[in-house]
Length: 341
Ligand SMILES: [Zn+2]
Ligand SMILES: [Zn+2]
Image (cartoon, rainbow, N blue to C red; front, side):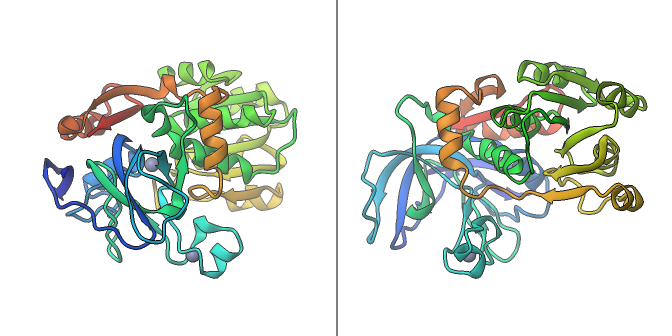
């Protein structure tokens, strides 16, 4: 098969690769669309350490079933499907308790952090266990379906929060996931959403996606948020993951408010301990997703979460290397780039 392989850091090569091996319980998927994730960019250049070459990356994909292995009963060749980015074991205590995103034996598609290597979907074919695949709604294109993973992350982040209608939320970071978190909050009846970002263009996107206000992340940001909310917001969603944005999110909350932590660019940050303790804030970490795929697919298909404006470009997989470089340079304000094998 043809694949886009990370052969060394910053060296993506399009060419022949061995077909994936099918184990019992697997399906082979003919990939029709696979999105480039921010984590793939940080993997490609070695900065995250989670894509140790050689690896075929790609965990945001959709396609059709090309082959089913032994022990697969509910699926047939030709079914249009997508798959969870996480392969969970289904047997550990966390899986049994229904928290598959916390699985002890979790493997992420297209990732090689050192203790495993799981080839992903920047390829014509990818093998995945049948237990992690989901059928596509009939009217949903492969390209839109490939955004189901970031949508499920946004829905999971919102599902972690103690939401009540009529609350005010601040979303810090209006990139891909931030824009989806804004839409996810709206599906839960949160209509007053203040988006914060350093980039005015991203704030305009946030307003198009349903944010009621966009605020530039500068020295005056907290002052502006206070003017809009009085006491501070009920909820803040941090979707960047560095010291400055974490502190801004915490400062934007009222006493007793709740903070959702989704971004994790920096492994460690400064943390305003006293502000959290003395104001009794509650923090909710959110990792990946846990059961949100069906809702995400339904909402993309019926348009209650609109992913079309998030797709910047659709290009052949053979041109993948140059799109990775363009995304990495960050000069063009690209959101999602989808590659087609
Ligand atoms: Zn991703
Ligand atoms: Zn498990």
